[in-house]
Image (cartoon, rainbow, N blue to C red; front, side):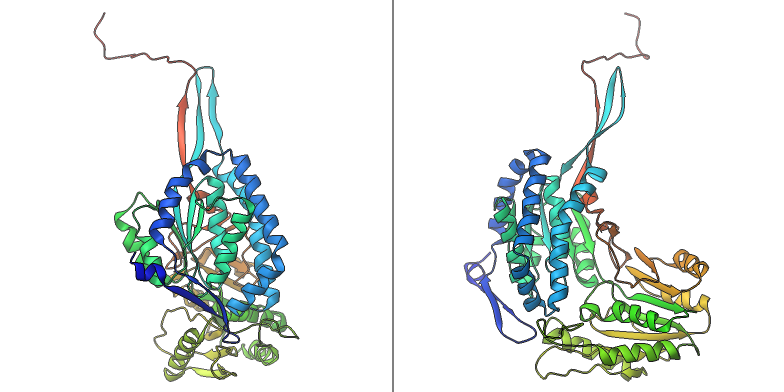
Length: 475
């Protein structure tokens, strides 16, 4: 890394106000990786009970600093304070969940044992793992990689999103305060160039990434010649939400609004396409529009509390607006416009647009509060529409008849398939991941233990007992 790059600084701006929130130096990838390579073996040699105790202190530290942490996260992302508090609580809760997952999925045990010996299963850490975090859940999602990786005995070099470096810095500070050595988890703030340098560094043993499908595909190509390095990808989705023969349109509308507009639509599991029966959609649409009209879009700390804040920055808002206008130009029928109520700030009022008559709809993730309605003639056509995507993260059906869910579940290709629940309802105590462009078959959350260590099988005997039963000439 050049001296100029090493002396550069990174600035974080509050999306809701435009105020400068944080400034710090760009990280030194070479130094961070070298320190991790020097320090990870000692961390891995510690008894797992000691690593568990250290991470339990981390959880206690996060809870003790919870209000300040949530305040910082809300300011940096623009998400409402109530939602930021929920995210910080998930950060702390991740430790207990990961301890259980580590024991269940990556623990040590005998596969069989006899008088002659035993076959044992143990797991080893990879070594030094890079973690690249997203801006939408800048504490919870990278932490979902970091906790199980540290439990397994790895060292971490963490680059947060360049849009949320302050949250990343506080997360790492909580680890250090809890007793995780600085050589075992290091922060390297910076932009895409720092991310590329870290991903391509010869000193890492793998990369754990959460972000866009486009970036994930580039990383997949980059790692194609490095099968010895673990690569776990959590990517986006063009997620379908199907509402069919539901007798409670108000309840269904609430689930639709939660699925599409929570976190200003900046969730990889957000509903992007709402599939309905043609000619029977009016009560549902009216209920959704009534809720949209009542949704509070405001600053994170506003009173009354908002349902959603701004998207992450003006560039993101411009991108969402451009994608929405493309749908309008292609023949989409606007039911609720994508208003931008505050000039110069990235607040967006949620949009609803009927895209049924657009002949060739782009299979892309619009990462913001835009929900597209697709009307279909029958349930089979709805199943085909739901499956008409290269992505495969989340899908949901709202329907009274359980037999319809059986058909929906069987026809869906996604890692999360919900019934009468929002598309973004995924617990940390379950695996989280997708197929297609949504991931590379490395589900995280409860299953993160699987990619943070590799299994080692040992045939063991207290003394050598060797004999060649066949193929020898007489002595």
